[in-house]
Image (cartoon, rainbow, N blue to C red; front, side, top):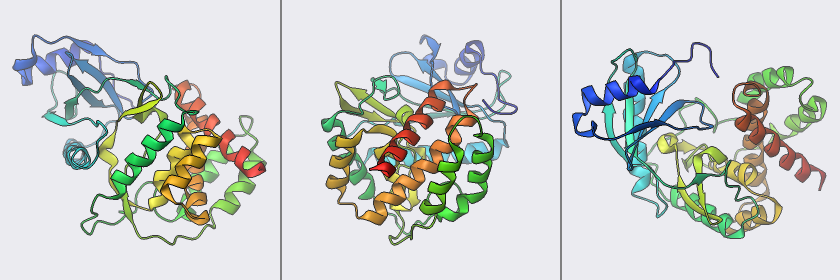
Amino acid sequence: MHDGELAVPVSTVRDLIDEQFPQWRPLTVKRLDSSGTVNAIFRIGEELAGRFPLVPDEISKVRRQLRAEADAAAELAAHTRFPVPVPVALGEPGAGYPLPWSVQTWLPGETADVNDPGSSIAFAHDLADFIEDVRAVDTRGRVFGGRGRGGDLRREDAWMATCFERSEGLLDVPVLRRLWAELRELPRRADDGMTHGDLIPGNVLVADGRLAGVLDTGGLGATDPALELVGAWHLLEDEPRAVLRDRLRCDDVAWQRGRAWAFAQAMGLVWYYRQTNPTMARTGRRTLERILAAERE
């Protein structure tokens, strides 16, 4: 999926576990099929999951990032009733794998790109509960750090220009360009608040039409609160989406800014992953279809 992406065979993971965590030698190791784009995921026994970064980087930088992710996951776990992975251990490079890696608790359930909750009103209520839980986390003075989504929409212009160029022949680019020209002008009114930051189908677990857990919690941080509303467009159809908006008491500007963040994210998914990760590409297309449908209403 990425230039220079690391190969992580099961045999390497087995060796790393045996060398660094001998207490887990009796446990089976199995690579999981996943739509994730940042880590290779392995199930370790019945209760653990190993996450191995796929993109080469400096060892010290990756170690700091993994520790920060573990801290964020522990913080979120203490503030929501919904299951989230809990950090267990941090592994070091070895056995031919060049980066630190992490181990966390395994959560049962199917991701929303496998078990679609889009028409479930109950899921919309659960998602609203989770977003409220996250928003209740104290920022402790934390503010948006300036990288990634969650700041000024207009800072996405260069990325969006790339997306529009690469999407020629895949999407109706003139229509999408006109929509972005409107969305980027939406004013920012709310102070930074805590958000999960990436409520896409691959990060949400579903069981019986309900929210069963939330993955990839390391991105917990202070951003534009509207960033959390991307889940309304990535995950929900019209009626449940309206329920979510009502539950969160979103004004027009906040709601539209959430749509803008979902738009910016979805535009990157379609062309970037169309050959290497079809599930992510489909997620992007469906989100854009929902956004455009709302524009026509």
